[in-house]
Image (cartoon, rainbow, N blue to C red):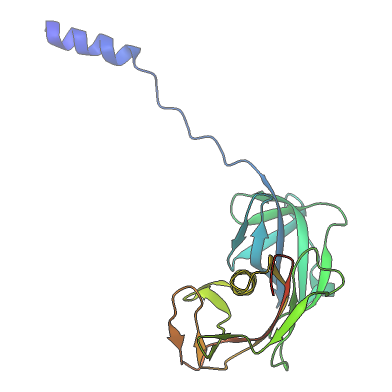
Length: 203
C-alpha cells in the first residue's frame, strides 16, 4: 500500500505531455514549373542554403485562397514568401517572377535553365559538357539533386564559382552522374547539352 502511494505521488508531480509546437512558416524563394495548373518545385532557396527537390506546392495569396496560375501555364517561375506545413506557400505580393518556358516543355528538346541573380547571361559557356568522356547527366546524384546542383558542381570542378545557366535535352542517353560516376544508359536519361559558368579562379 505504501509503495502504491509513493508511486501515485511521483506520477502526480511529473509534467503532463505537451503537444508538439506547430511548424513555423519559413521564409524562402521557390523556383519551379507550372504544368496542368500545378506548380512543381525544382529547388528552394532558404538564404543559407539551397534545397533541390520536386514537390507539388500549393501557392496561396492568403490562407485558403490559391494563386491564379493560368497565366503561367508552361512557364518556370520563382516566388518569394513563407513555406507553410503541408507543402503550402504563402506568396508575397508581386513576388512572382516569370523565368521563361519550362525545361523540356511540350514540343521542345530542351530549354535554358537560368539561375536566380543571372540577368545578363554573361559567363563562359561550355557546349556538350562531359564527365570522363560521357555527357553530363542532368542530376548530380542518381535520380536526385537535378538541374542547378549538377550544373553548379560541374562548374566548381573547373574552378568557377557556380553555374549561371544550363540547357538540358530530355531522354538522351548515355550520361554520367557527376557525383557517383554511374553511367545512365536507359531511355529516360537526360543530359546537359550546355552549361554556363561564372566567377571563381579558372584558366
